[in-house]
View: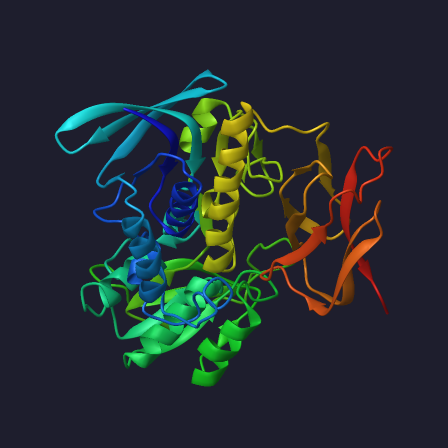
Length: 414
């Protein structure tokens, strides 16, 4: 089977990419490992989706159904319950994907690949929680699926571990269903989620947020009975003597997401330790020509709107690549992380196209700007938080020819 573009992943990034590819006249195929298209938003019944992308405040299910409808109206073929086992680079215009689908194994050859395989949750075994292994411990995604897809209540006295947006939203979800949320435990000294979610999901419901704390052990034989929580020091190590027991029957792990990049790594794609995803240029092309990445497989995003926009950008990149057997540019300029910057995407720019850099700061800052040192371009905010991505645009032709590197940094203003 031959196509112009193979999209791996049928979530928001993959669907937006596939729809855009189809509109650009590119033959496109989607491969999705799940039972149906849609990804995680299928189990998100809360609002907050689509404000920027569709100009409306939608639930996750409403948002994703619009993208699915768009793909189906455009006649984009797709495979579900299909798993890509291997990606092979044949030459600049040919990549091969080996796929296991129900009842068959197939090979799909594509001129370009858009990798939008999303991310996975960190589990309890990855965050140094010791003790018993009773029932009642779930990841946030597992708990969300139980409640929103199957109508099951995981527990009645709930402790959330991690204050990222998913953890905050699940705290509210449990509260709305009548559970007692005994607290949200966050190891960092600041919340991991958007400020609006801290307010709407915790403060509005009187749910305690325990910053600079960690769950260090679980008690219970058959079912969770309690969690042992302790304060942590500046090195994130438990402080002896601060341990306390919090009774609960359910522990929900919301300790963040990790990009699904195994296939890319096996293909030889260069990775960025800061994002845990691939290094990409301004069109989201990885170090392997014609292989693009978008969404949470690229870097963990705040908003699904950004994920969908990245899918469309990757589609534009695929079109340019296919038309030119490569991305035509005179040079690639690396974007380095300077003072106060934890990550930045993309990591390479040409100066020939309009580019929106997305960055996260390493810690909270007040009255500060994110600045591109060599260009004097900056975006300022009263407060910069690690949980909230900052965007800064570079206009075409604004990078002098003698500039060989751009440095993104935080500049504080007293």
